[in-house]
Image (cartoon, rainbow, N blue to C red; front, side, top):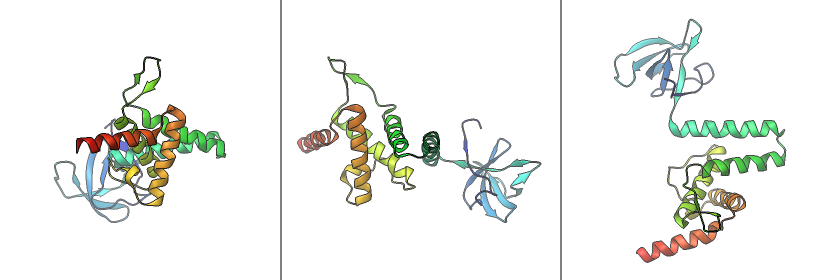
Length: 192
């Protein structure tokens, strides 16, 4: 269970039908919540139903968080930690933006030009910038599917996330994102 990300207890946020919970190393799916007790089935087998207490002998059942929610929780935690260290100042927000941008760049293969400068393909630059925009969007409590293209968005809020991401990327990487986007569109047009 060590690789599971555990969230709130029932007391903190009532469990809903269909949610996965963990208790004492085992996982269950909530069928019905009756307040302090409920009905569950074993996960993943579906064996049951079982009558269940959300708290037993001082141990609490906890919500199991999926990958996307886990990333959002990690992001919020990072933002809160940065803001706490900087007393919520605007300088602190700048640091938070820089942290998000740096996190978005993790995992992108680093290449260097003959002068030793980092560079990426146009497609990688646009993908990373979209990832950063998605992280900004998630930090505000919104979600979009993986692979959503903020650079093609029409909604002003989503366009704003793209613009923020492009500015942060350009500031940190020294790369012109809009130029990379134009190059990528040209490449896509050539392929047909």
